[in-house]
Length: 114
Length: 113
Image 1 (cartoon, helix red, strand yellow):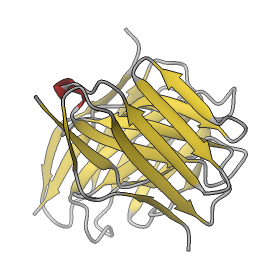
Image 2: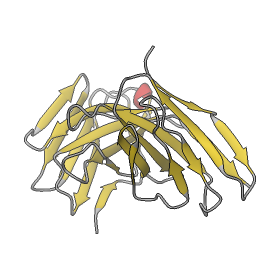
Image 3: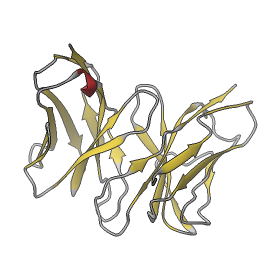
Image 4: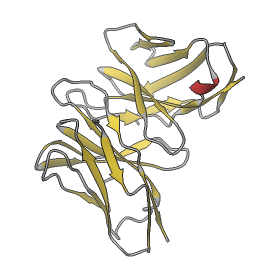
């Protein structure tokens, strides 16, 4: 049963703490992405990775960090430097073998920081 | 500045009618455009992709058009059903040559039985 898993579904943290969101895929996709979605807003790209051990900043990378040590995994760390971390976080993957193919999304993690 | 614009007002439509959504973009030259469906609290699901050299694409009750002169894509749901109620997102490639996407804010559709 192929797909993308994100855990946990809901996450609560105190201000000033770093938190890591998990994203795993078994689709054998090369490319993986992290987005943030706020109410009434579109998806904004945080980081993306097109291959293992390589990643690029998206439009709103400040206060976030990622790693891509394995093809299947692309964890996102929300650091204490992120000023407004409360949001719905979505991970996605796509095949990099052909341009313009769809992205497959995980179920999302809703992070609340108080 | 670069923009992807979708109507912020929800589209309320009677069951059986055709719903039409618009996606306009500014200062992009996309090689392709994609449409996704998103239900509340869930990740988007891919629906259709249309390339710059294609005028129209169909999939079951869905139809997408792409006009690179007008810088616009239209998304149609024919014979709409209550189960089609969701938010629909358009997305395009802001940098030709990779699989990165830029998304619009989405347009909610409510199909009234």
